[in-house]
Image (cartoon, rainbow, N blue to C red; front, side):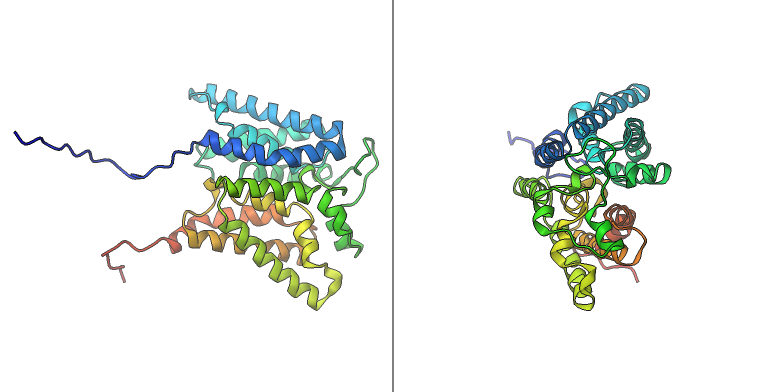
Length: 316
């Protein structure tokens, strides 16, 4: 008797990656550890308390929402912990504890679960939480503590000094991290190490970071040639939250295009918008708004960059 073959029909995807969400999120946490260490080194107890507050708040908020929605506990996929760390790294060390707590709750509740949970969110949750704080508590987010000072001594960030005082911070300080700013804006070398780790582990795609950095460099070079007071391209690559946003936020798979061509477009658009905001707005930094704006463009980018179906003629 000839054996009968059974054919199981199922929906796509048919080819699946072995990587799980928890593995990717664990890699992101490992990639962030150098930046976390640098933040604690330069800002001491203020940074440690802020990071701990944000992570605990994120995990607790995630657990409560899961209980309310009667869903399985998702705190062990580490996505909430990643959001907590990222929120902490994009906040100044002197922010009030309740401000950071509100920002994290907003990121998890609105930025993530209001859209349906992990993978369904349109915007990067951490950046959405910071955008909310920027609107609700603008003074908290524009008061920066000088590295090594744990009291009320404040200092302008390198981008503030460049934009409003036309003073450029030395590149060695930017590279090593002895500058004022948010926790994740301090050490460029630590962010580069963490970003390279993600790329080597393939937990983040290379197309968005490469296209973003190239487009930003081209615009910054043109600006420098027109008016050197605008800052060198290297300065704009190392200053602010660019590297943190490039490797750890712009590469968020849930909020970026699914096509290779779309990711190049996404990254290039982000890089151009960052420099447009830095040059022509009243804000010294544009990483947050550029990524959120491009997040909103993702459905449109996906629509016009999707590959054509084989053997099917497009409708006229």
